[in-house]
Length: 217
Image 1 (tube, helix red, strand yellow):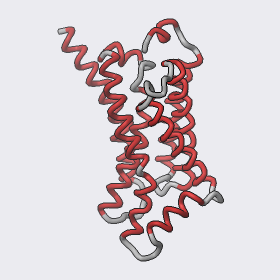
Image 2 (cartoon, helix red, strand yellow):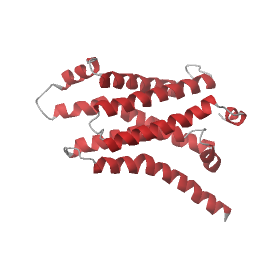
Image 3 (cartoon, rainbow, N blue to C red):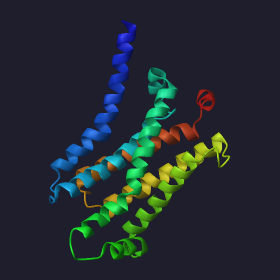
Image 4 (cartoon, one colour):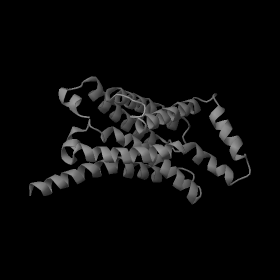
């Protein structure tokens, strides 16, 4: 009986995260008064939104979520964290390409010209924030994938990982709200709430470390 209740509790915790970071943003997007485009572009929009929101869920899929770690074991939490992290970092890395895709479907601007303009336009705060976020994603990916080859100590890597993630979510959220095509009031409020919750959750552990947290690797 106890094992069944534990399994149900585990499923419930994961379902809550799925609802918060998958179902809610999709509903907000579908209810938004956005001009509809072709199937390809709508699909890319949803993939990009989910890439960002699932990246935000990473705050709650680490050792700092003690209840989840206790329920499904640290090794399983890390597996989920890595799968989501690597998958959706790659999606976010392709975000600029998703913006350029429409240029292949019309004759307004050459795709190469559009891409060069995108990465060299510094007159817009939103673009600058996007570039900072993009650099952060690259740093997170490199330091995570090549952690051992870079000979980074665990504490050093963990600090880099945490602070670059915070810088990413702050600049990326600001970028989305500032110039994002899908940045109406409900979605903007949702992004800010999720980012604020994640950062508070992270800082609570980084700034107020307990001996128990220090022992978890």
